[in-house]
Length: 165
Image (cartoon, rainbow, N blue to C red):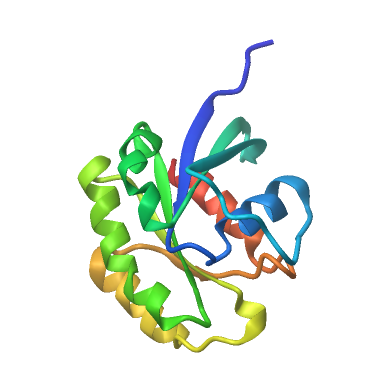
């Protein structure tokens, strides 16, 4: 029996937008209200079915705090798809997506990218239409709102990311 290929994907965005919660919801099926700050990077591997194929997603959760910026090049190297994650209740995290997109494309030019608005369960302050319009205008990136707390659209998000990889 051959081993399933591993596809490396990454989640980037400001600190506290819910990247770790999304990964935990997808990989472990659970949500923790309070989380410890991700230091540098964390990753998990989950087996995913893509039609007839089975792959293993190596999901890299990259710390959003500025003090970890110098490490990001190494963590993003070899990434096959990236999710730009923002908090739908925090306009600042949405406005910072341009910087995140620029950082990612300087390290992995042309990598397929999606835009994820997380914490949908709390009610969007950033209008979904504005975020979707930005994603389309800035690079024809797919857009999806998720809730790590309720699990809404989390499976769809990671399946889509797997297809892009």
